[in-house]
Length: 280
Image (cartoon, rainbow, N blue to C red):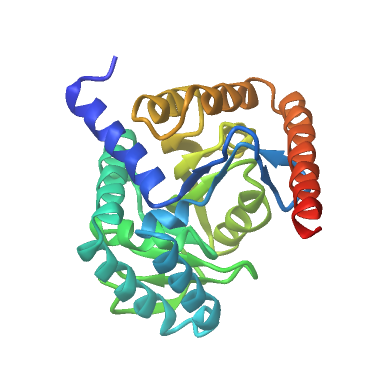
């Protein structure tokens, strides 16, 4: 059982998740419609732990516009992230908790570099490399990699990492497809090896197993599981009905999607009928 200090840290993390809207939970009768066409009771975007939706969207916009200027980009992005770390309590709290968990889980003497992949990993990987005093590897989806010293004053193309052991930082771990398609091949191409992964959140899907199959130990700060939603309920962010939907979704996602889809469609029809009546 977690001691009092650990329990307080967990409570703070849950508050950070909800207050920053990194985790959004739907009302009981109106689940979220996902881009896939499925519906579900929550949406999670860990980049909002940067402080809030507005600041995280602004940083993402900066990344999109500047990521191809690879010599100057890492230092410019790091400057923005470091300033946010010093001024936004939500972000600094999350980053400090990440650093503590990493130091508990990984022998940093064995870590040569810290990496982050395009784009949202960079919200967290650069500041983590700086705090843990390790070179940072900025991975792009074309498998290009640049290396930067811990203070982000020197950047160069990473062509030969000389077998470096790498700790990767990711925002969300789901099925680890980006690892298979991009991060692992990119680091291997540069003659390095990803040995560890630390995720801000683990969706508790296939990701950890996929990484183990590739020789990568995986750890996380937050797990999207029953314990998390129990704490969300305890803190009063949701009611019993919402909690029950979330637990059902975790226990049997496919069946729960069918139920939620019916509820979503029924609610949509009700709203449309109401609109027709109001229009008359």
